[in-house]
Length: 304
Ligand code: DON
Image 1: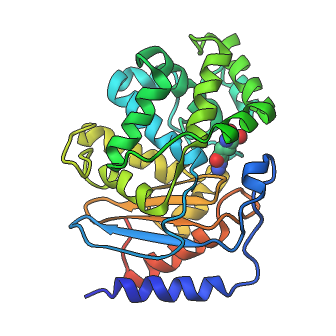
Image 2: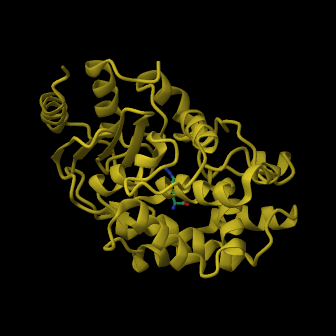
């Protein structure tokens, strides 16, 4: 019998005392003013038990974690045609890196780096009737929580500072891998990054990745095969140029965001989310990665 609450409490207490908590993202004011001492963890077991510790009910900017939700939506609409426009290889580069995109003729390495997520955003702008509203409704549905919203101020700041994202979108356009106007696609992308969720909400939303595409409301959103592929992409590409390190240390499919959130899962067993806004040099939550390493080590639960 694993003592989940005891393990979570021990990890949280120990890491909270650590002096080096990393540095909060500074490129926009909405992220730079977040308290570096915030730290929450939420664990959902697939059988319905859940445990949490710390700031697990404080909403934070999910940022790039949104990329797995847009991927799920686009994959469930387009099926394997999706892979004509984006590849599934780790990039080994930072999330906003551009030179590979040009070298590889406008086909992004994977859907979890910025250029790949911008292609996915383009697909959803084409396929959804009211793209931003429909996508937000989807997030609310899989979380079973109507209170989730876009943070307009964050979305505006993303646009004002998003020069590399404009560069990526224009490069994609020049290679005919963007069907809609750059401005429309990036408006969608900046909004998806601005969504605020708590650790608890994110762990609930991630349930379908641990449960073959079926959400907590028992609705099927995706096929088991598509979920297998998305989880594989999370494992190999979910942490940019630190994906190898995350697989090595933690051994779970997961996704990080520069807001300091990490969501991870073990198929058929659990989803777990952490939030600590201080980032390491690669842009992943410093305490979050350590917490998940300790969790999979202490419980002996990982995909390996
Ligand atoms: O696109 C951007 O630059 C930001 N919204 C950052 C997204 C993000 O979280 C990347 N990484 N972890």
